[in-house]
Length: 326
Image (cartoon, rainbow, N blue to C red; front, side, top):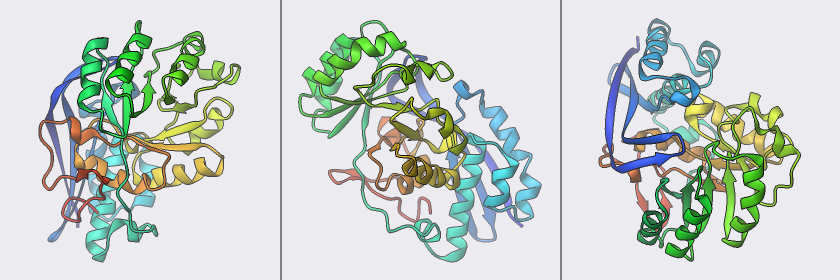
């Protein structure tokens, strides 16, 4: 029998984090633990209000499967039992961890993947006044990749300020659905001159058909418009890349399948995250192998993290130790 335990946990941020939809000073996550004798598998998810999720709703959805989990529900059955989203992500990744403990092998081995290596990750600068964003960029100018949150009036001034603060870093931009097609067309040439490599989700999901009708000199990545493999048909001709997040796909199982299918369709792959701890990033490091862009900086934005945490150093983000996950 497998015992299911759930916890709501809050992790304070180093400083307030702002995107086009609002600000926060802590990150609330749901932690799932599956215990089988002396073995424990665990994982974490971040319910996201943008997708109609709440902590309570996610915990209720997971709790409803307690009996099935106790009786040995596997990852294949889980895919049918829950839709893509945070609840399925936590259970799916906890099952991966438990399976690795049972087998005495690493999760990447169970998935038939090569041993993962460190990957360079973006560091995110939240939406703020240009001068404060310039200072933050200067503090992180030695990082190879900066992700800049935009999505409002004054975006070009913010971006110029970031470039002044970090003249050598590669920059990617996340508009978080905050632009129109006209704004993209106006800003894209200037962003290219500033050395921006890509923009995420400039238009609202569901209103992005205009991307198929305009030139896209600056590559566009689908975030809110891409959840799992079922999303891909609607992205054809509109996007150049997809941002794979485990809280959207509903776990590592679908994330790996989405990565392969997106690649087969000629779409570039970015691997991103919701705000979370090292436990949330750990399974995503497997998907990140070979990705064009990796954005798994969640723990760097927290005031405290799990133990043991993931390692971030000059070589990049390292794969998780077995004591953390997988």
